[in-house]
Image (cartoon, rainbow, N blue to C red; front, side):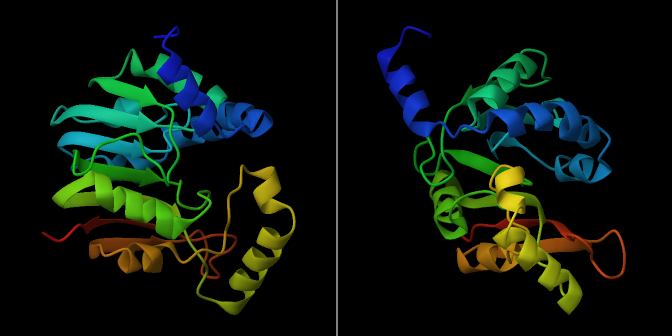
Length: 219
C-alpha cells in the first residue's frame, strides 16, 4: 500500500495540512466527542455501505451498528487520517480510511447507501460542491445523516458569528465557519429533509447552535 504510486499521488493531491489544529483536535475535541450523545443519536439508524465525510481521527468509528456492512471514511488532513487508520483497526465494522476532498470524493457514482456528516460542512471550501458530490455518490433513496453547527437565528448571535468568521475563527479552527446556513444548503442540493432538531446551549444561540437530522435523496 505504501509503495503504490497512485495511492501516493492521490494522498498528495487530496491533503489539506493543518498540523497544529489536528493535534489539538485529536487531544481535546476528540475526547469531548466521545461523550457527545448527539453523535450517538446520529449513528443509530444506519445500514449497508456508509460514507463518513471528514472522519477526523476516527472518533465516530466505535458507534457504527452491525447493520452497517462497510464504511468508507474520507479525511484530507494527514495527521488526522493516520490516527483514523489506527482507530479503524478496532472498529466493530470494516472501515476503509481514504484520502479525499469533499468536492472530489474517491468513490463511484451511486456507490453508497448512507452518508454521515458530523461537524464537517462548516469547514469545506464550498458547501454546494461538497453536497453535489454527496449526491453523486449516494444511491437514489440514499440518506444523509447530519450533525452540524449553523448560523444563529437571532441578531446578536449572527453578528458574533460573522465577526468571528471574518477574523480569527477559520484560521484558528481548521477553516471552520460559524455563519453558514447548512440546512438551506442541503435543501438547495436537492435533498429532502426528513426530520431535524435544532440544538442550542442557551436561548440566545451563542456562540453556535447545531442541527441534528436526516435528509433523503429522492428516487
